[in-house]
Amino acid sequence: DVKVTQSSRYLVKRTGEKVFLECVQDMDHENMFWYRQDPGLGLRLIYFSYDVKMKEKGDIPEGYSVSREKKERFSLILESASTNQTSMYLCASRDGGLYGYTFGSGTRLTVV
Amino acid sequence: QQQVKQSPQSLIVQKGGIPIINCAYENTAFDYFPWYQQFPGKGPALLIAIRPDVSEKKEGRFTISFNKSAKQFSLHIMDSQPGDSATYFCAAADSGNTPLVFGKGTRLSVIA
Image (cartoon, rainbow over all chains, first blue to last red; front, top):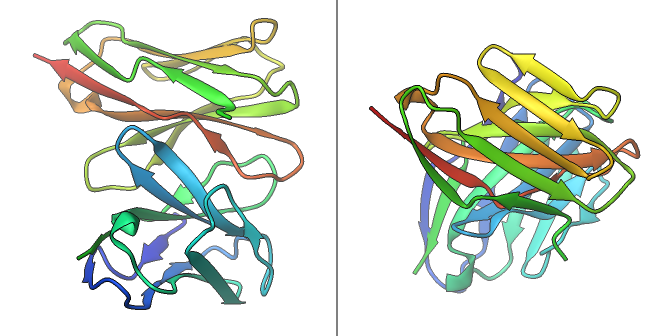
């Protein structure tokens, strides 16, 4: 089975901190994605990447950046955390084209 | 602009009932329609998916019905069980290797 591993299940950070959320997949998938999930708003795409060192903005990229230095790892960076970034963050990977995503278990981030 | 509209937002059914979750899309280029199931504390998991060359697909107790002319698709869960209680997301994508577009989710509760 494909595994997508997110490094932390729960994080609590202070306003203004730089926050790194890490995601690693073990099936050599080309595509990787970061979503945030909020009640009533569903899954919103933050950034995605189709190859190493490549990144594309999703629907809500403001306040975030990403890094993909290796194919298996896709990191989400909150440059200066704010309370409105308190959310569940989900990483996913896909073997290109018309295939379903495999999601990680999520990181619940609280910014205080 | 919401490209995939999902309803209802929440649903309560008795054990053995047949919950139906509906999704409507606008982009006629979409040609891949997956459904995801998410349990509390977990990431979404691919449940079943359909392509527009068929009008129905069954996998176990889960059935997708697809109406291309109406641009609608729905998930039916036969003989629902309390273990089916979860949040369900529909999604859609086109063949251009673009990210999935998700509906906002339906929280299903199956009560004994």
